[in-house]
Length: 324
Figure 1: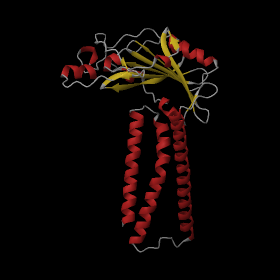
Figure 2: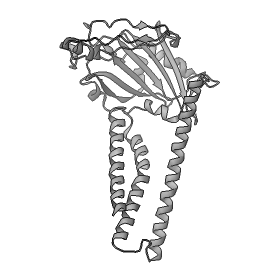
Figure 3: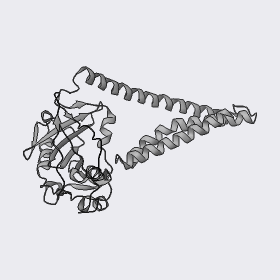
Figure 4: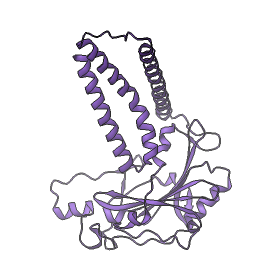
């Protein structure tokens, strides 16, 4: 009886966790559905197989049926299923151990100040760190239909010569203030352009000027190249133009290749942006502490609804999430 209950609970918990993982990863992180299913389904097979085995054992024990089938084909089938389950469990455990070891090594290097920079200038990361850059794209018309800002026009830029993969919008503080647009280059690389209009949702960002040695049309910018143990890479370029944050990345290591110059040329080709909320009250300048990092302002004892609305972007006119 207990084995059957344990099997049922394990199966229910596995299905619930898998559904939550797929929903969160696809809807919030915009990961491709097929990729997420390819990760979630194999991961769920082991606990579901174990749940089935527990349920079968519990059922046979309750009915006084021998646990081991009497017929030879059934015994071979049970033995094969058990070995396959154990083999998959061992493989899955090995993968988890490798991910954990990679994460621990990265944490230890960061904690001791040891360099994670490769000889070519890229940063060594775990494979899972690259997954957040694999965005799932849908119809660009649907993605931009309810945007609270006007994305930059790419029709007169080199982006227009690339194969468009679609777009995905993202909500911040209840406002559709982010847009991802995907492209395929002529040599097969996947390129993603990200825009975030912070005037719409009231957020703000800070970055140490020392981390922005590059320049995009005279604006400070940062290029990082992330490379995993298998050689897969993402080259990520980011910068700010007023209240518009930009990110542009490609699924390749651009260090020492012509692709680096092409990435910067694409970034420099973007026309000036138009704020989604032109009448926004400018945010207060960051206060930098003795350590060189920004200091949060103390929480006021009383805050009005107008101040709450201003901080969360819930304002009237063009800043209430309606298309501009």
